[in-house]
Length: 487
Picture 1: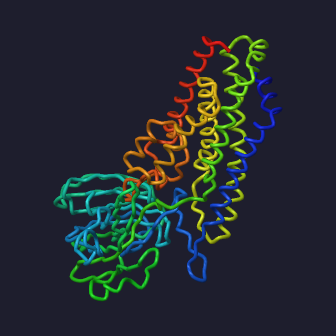
Picture 2 (picture 1 turned 30 degrees about the horizontal axis):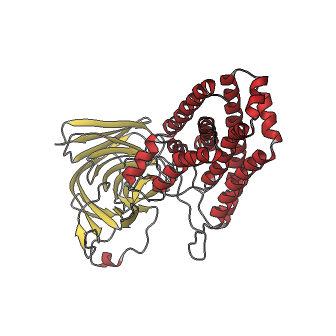
């Protein structure tokens, strides 16, 4: 049966044209978006963000007062004061105010040198999230007693352990990670931008980020690493804002056994940046696939050819299953080829226009390619099931578009409030688009993680499972109706 259905698919020129159009639309859309994307940093290429130990693009910019730690050792300190400044926050945006953003950081850190992107482990106070242990940019762990101001970081062998205390006598372990080799140990200060998300009247959002700065005073310092405290602004620093002329400049002040650090920046994964737009052609290609999948069955009903098919293969359920396997399998193969071609060609164009190509990792690349092909294959089976149920091409195509494409567009083009868009991407077949989420959402990076920004409410495989459940359910209904109805 499958061989017979493959033969039909190959011999009908319109169906082959539709599948070819899907490939052309997928690759062509990716190339158009890549060609229209430009990035410029004056007369030089824009610098790429550093890459962390896990292969993720990271932000590594903070104030660092440090000493060299050759082997085992420890650092203990009391955070006497932790304050900050936020520039021109809402609602009036007319002044610089005192305050800390939620993920401002002041604490102790051991880091493999001062090179941006190098491994590190840190224990810190934050603006609103208590004591945390963070390491290698993407890992974050809460711990320690509420209100703790004493911090300790020790290294024994390859184990780095973070502690927190209320009184400097009774210590609570926050966490332990592995880190070996010569390193720099010391104090960090960082303060990321003040992010606000404002909804407009159409359901869309606008995102603003304002410059912030934090200061921390460390005293009662005990360190096994000797020498003078050296200060570096990891990641480099610019000329600073004009208001810094009248406020505390970034840097280190040491006096009477106290260290005062002032600075901005963050140690965190880069989020909210688009990757190479090679998946931009998904929706145009999906429209072509939906049309082919519906006509693959409705044309047989319209011309009466289904009777001939059933004469050759009387088992109606088997006939429908064979057709579903063919349209799903062929769609998967065709789209997978399109994804691979679009990624290779659009990346070249994207880079040529000065854009930064963020690393995504081999497993993520595999999931994006195979997942996108699976998404369109599942959606093709869904549209095919609608074609069996309705037996008419145009109504089946329109309903398939209404179930799959429309919810996705409503959620990702800010035509709906983020909450409503996320609801659609949980319960409709458009949930399958979650397989195309490139970067994870990080709890310790404050950003609008909405569908419009490329973040979905379900995990990739969970979203694809929702779409597959819709396709399977419609296919089962189609088999039941086809067995009982006349042809």
